[in-house]
Length: 136
Image (tube, rainbow, N blue to C red; front, side, top):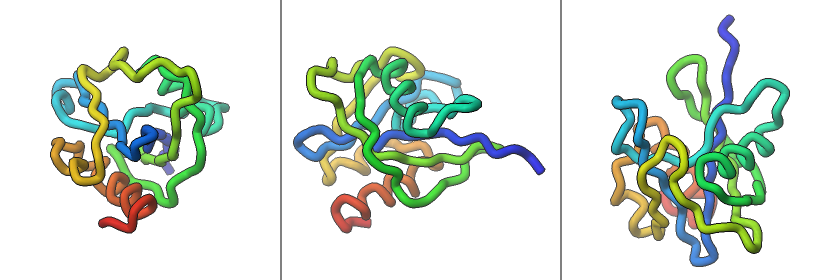
């Protein structure tokens, strides 16, 4: 049986209730598409700690990881996506694209579907919306 590798994604909201989306700059087959920021959980690392580290490395922010969004979504085998809600810590720098992304956008609930999400992130984004607002 192939080992499962967990990728953590952030449902990072600002004080106005907007969700942060990140546009991929690489690899070429994903470039230009939008995703939830995050990355792989390293061996021996807890998922919430991995997400805080990834947000620091990718976006230059100090974030508090709040809770896991129920569910797990398949990515390219052997990867699976888990999503955690998160918020910026007081005094954190504003997010900026440092690694793997060339743009960031804060999206209101009405704007969520105005970006071209990666197919594998769509079910997770739907779950986030259902959890925070009852919208599907």
